[in-house]
Image (tube, rainbow, N blue to C red; front, side, top):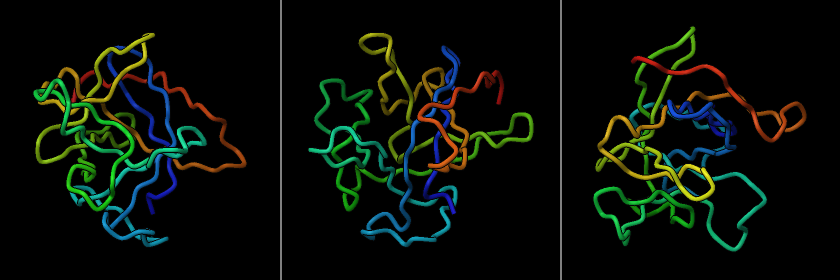
Length: 157
C-alpha cells in the first residue's frame, strides 16, 4: 500500500528533502479505498499531508490559469475529481537498490524551478533538467521526524 508515505525529492540542484503526501486510487473515489495498492502508470491523486493551509483543499493540481502556460505551476487546492488533479507515478530507474520515480501527467512531468527564498516551486515541464525524482519512504508518525534528508544524488538514469 502506498497511501501514507513521505516523498523524498531527489533534485540535482540541492539535497533531497521529504514532504508527507498521500496517494488515492482510484483518484475520483473520496474517501479513497483504505488499503488500495497504488500502481505505477495509473491515475492517482496526490494530497499534501500537513496541518498548514487548512482553508484550502490539499490535493495537488496543475494551474490551468497560469501566467506561464508553457510551464504551469503545480499547487494545492485541487479537486480530486478533476482531470488537472490526476497524476501518474512513473518508474525511471534505480539507485543503490532503491527505485527512482517521477510524477507525470498527459501534458508533462512534474519539475521544480527556483522560487522565492530559495524554495523550489513545482511546475509541469517538458524540460528533463527540471524534472524532480522521488523515492518513497514508509511513514510512521511515532518514529519519523518532520523532515528526512537524503544525501544521495541521482546522476544518471
